[in-house]
Length: 318
Image 1: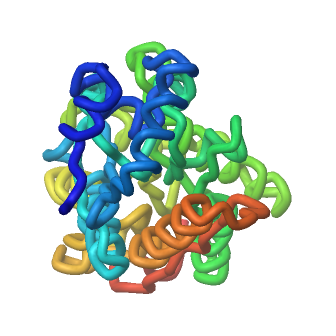
Image 2: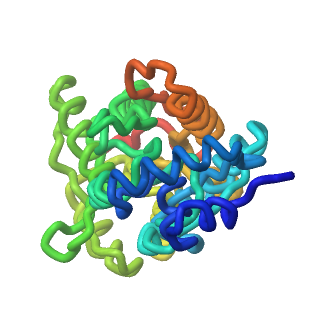
Image 3: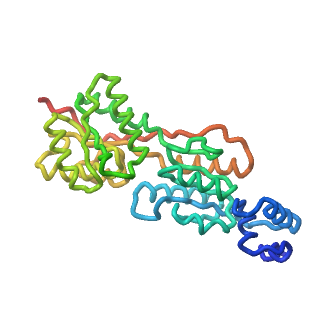
């Protein structure tokens, strides 16, 4: 006879919610109750058919990065024969009583990590740049310095010296991405190492039209190329440069962090792209090790792929 959760409820005297939380390792259940329920489950021979893994994202739609992450992580988990539960970061309370084996999350901040440590006692792997090795939680993240260095080497080889980058306006945004700040800092570091200007910043807020004043400013300052630090914003740059009557790359070059759609622009956009399939694969491998109580030595850093296309050309002579 197959043993189910209801058998453990009957034997233990606890509610179904409490039993589910205890089997899930939830810290919402007192330690003595959790231990008793788990011992009963073991004695009765309770087993889950397939382990359930949660994929946690800030949003389930509308963002290229989160959507790509969700797609590739789902594929990697399916190969490992897991059941998958996709959920938004704001809905974690809904899964506190769900029998999860572990989770993979993409984080913007460490708020989720704090909540997870307070409410769960199951493995969590993060895809981000901020939670590195924090409280036993492991991270898979892209090598932002390598990505910026690859772009700048390509541009400098084309003769560019006055290289501008898009920069979120810190005074107008309350949610500056730590990843975008990293990219900006690496731009400054690498440009200084070459002895080139590191202050050609195209300020804007998240309204697309706010790019126009910044574009005019960096053109007045003789920039020969613009790097978009944010995925999808290179497309916006192409649009507004066209509106100003400028040709890319004849008058000014454009490149940046890519999405799948940038190769279909006119001209196709040069840039670096995160290796989502490899990141997802490493996230699942790391989670498997944690579930099997195998040692996980370090976080994993994945290099960017660079694609040289027609949006970058030789620096325009003054």
